[in-house]
Length: 299
Image (cartoon, rainbow, N blue to C red; front, side, top):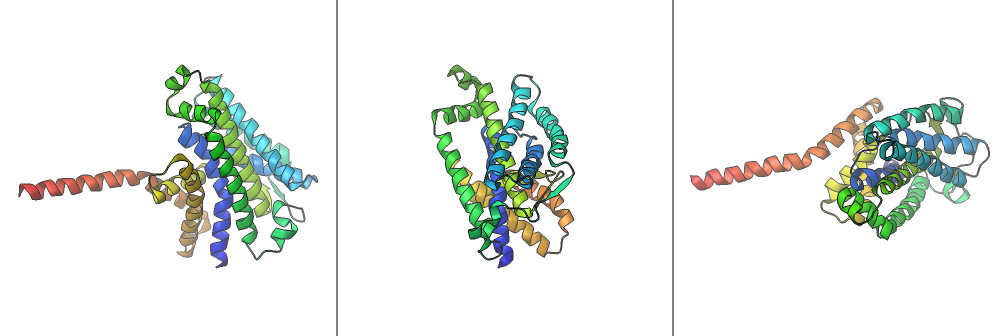
């Protein structure tokens, strides 16, 4: 029971990453590598701020702001510097490594004995692992509601139009460069916010904790889409959270089967690859079914 509760709590906290990446990967239609740098950047910022006496909530919001600045830099390199988005993301991701070391002063900083969002009186009184579930539900309800509301505004519709068809969006008077920059800022802000939450839940920040983050965030998106089929845009945002929880249960099952925790990145990549290839498998199977029916008819 405790393992299941822990998986749900972890899935909810890590779902923030899925929603953040969804804005660039699904709406703007490109993969942003900056997230592998902004996740530990958010963690480093929050942990360093908390260690120096800042309120945990303010430290977490500060992490969002710092992540948004990293997204701004990527956006400017991409739109104004005309650097391909993949390379722009890698440049900022690489720079974040040194920035994180500067912020923390060393490779790993512990929050032992420090106040965090998970150590308030109410959450501390809950049974083991229920603190991450309660806080995770609260955070995801707020974030998902805000994103859904934003996408229904005039600016949000312009943001969606930019991802659908840039030429059409420009013809409607939409500044597509600004929309891309805004999307990268919000996306990386959310990723850094997620990093701050995960670091407080784990009790430490590490300069290498961003390795493989984009695969985890993509898994939340892809598994949610595969599990729940054709959905509206708003429903897909909710499915990201559910996909993140399902992904945690898959990892839990893998560990139960006797695999090492060192294999999790490899297994995550395999799971993601299989999920992304499911449409191809379905097409091949459907084609074979049609071919078989055709042969049976001829006979």
